Image (cartoon, rainbow, N blue to C red):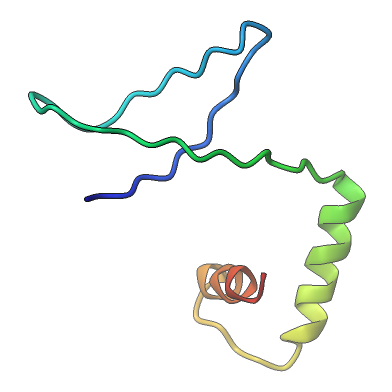
Length: 74
Protein backbone atom coordinates (compact mmCIF):
# COMPACT_ATOMS: atom_id res chain seq x y z
CA UNK A 1 0.00 0.00 0.00
CA UNK A 2 1.26 3.48 -0.85
CA UNK A 3 0.22 6.83 0.58
CA UNK A 4 0.07 10.07 -1.42
CA UNK A 5 -0.86 13.43 0.08
CA UNK A 6 -2.35 16.06 -2.24
CA UNK A 7 -3.94 19.45 -1.79
CA UNK A 8 -7.00 20.15 -3.91
CA UNK A 9 -9.90 22.58 -4.17
CA UNK A 10 -13.46 21.34 -4.29
CA UNK A 11 -15.78 23.77 -6.04
CA UNK A 12 -19.51 24.46 -5.77
CA UNK A 13 -20.30 21.20 -7.57
CA UNK A 14 -18.71 19.14 -4.78
CA UNK A 15 -16.60 17.13 -7.21
CA UNK A 16 -13.07 16.15 -6.24
CA UNK A 17 -10.80 15.36 -9.19
CA UNK A 18 -7.49 13.65 -8.57
CA UNK A 19 -4.63 12.78 -10.86
CA UNK A 20 -2.35 10.09 -9.46
CA UNK A 21 1.05 8.96 -10.73
CA UNK A 22 -0.27 5.42 -11.35
CA UNK A 23 -0.69 3.77 -14.75
CA UNK A 24 -2.10 0.50 -16.01
CA UNK A 25 -3.10 -0.83 -12.57
CA UNK A 26 -6.28 -1.72 -10.77
CA UNK A 27 -6.29 0.14 -7.45
CA UNK A 28 -8.48 0.61 -4.45
CA UNK A 29 -8.45 4.21 -3.19
CA UNK A 30 -9.46 5.59 0.19
CA UNK A 31 -10.12 9.30 0.67
CA UNK A 32 -9.68 10.94 4.05
CA UNK A 33 -10.01 14.70 3.93
CA UNK A 34 -9.17 17.56 6.24
CA UNK A 35 -10.18 21.17 5.56
CA UNK A 36 -7.23 23.54 5.26
CA UNK A 37 -7.39 26.52 7.58
CA UNK A 38 -6.24 29.64 5.79
CA UNK A 39 -4.02 31.99 7.74
CA UNK A 40 -4.13 35.73 7.46
CA UNK A 41 -0.99 37.65 6.55
CA UNK A 42 -0.74 38.86 10.16
CA UNK A 43 -0.95 35.29 11.51
CA UNK A 44 1.82 34.15 9.16
CA UNK A 45 3.95 37.15 10.11
CA UNK A 46 3.49 36.46 13.86
CA UNK A 47 4.38 32.79 13.41
CA UNK A 48 7.50 33.68 11.42
CA UNK A 49 8.60 36.21 14.07
CA UNK A 50 8.12 33.60 16.83
CA UNK A 51 10.14 31.08 14.82
CA UNK A 52 12.97 33.60 14.36
CA UNK A 53 13.03 34.36 18.09
CA UNK A 54 13.03 30.67 18.96
CA UNK A 55 16.09 30.00 16.75
CA UNK A 56 17.78 33.35 17.35
CA UNK A 57 21.38 32.28 17.99
CA UNK A 58 21.40 29.15 15.84
CA UNK A 59 23.19 28.90 12.53
CA UNK A 60 21.48 27.06 9.68
CA UNK A 61 23.21 26.30 6.41
CA UNK A 62 20.06 27.31 4.53
CA UNK A 63 16.45 28.36 5.12
CA UNK A 64 15.16 24.85 4.32
CA UNK A 65 16.55 23.58 7.63
CA UNK A 66 14.77 26.36 9.52
CA UNK A 67 11.45 25.64 7.81
CA UNK A 68 11.81 21.89 8.40
CA UNK A 69 12.46 22.54 12.11
CA UNK A 70 9.31 24.69 12.30
CA UNK A 71 7.17 22.04 10.58
CA UNK A 72 8.36 19.37 12.99
CA UNK A 73 7.33 21.53 15.93
CA UNK A 74 3.80 21.95 14.52
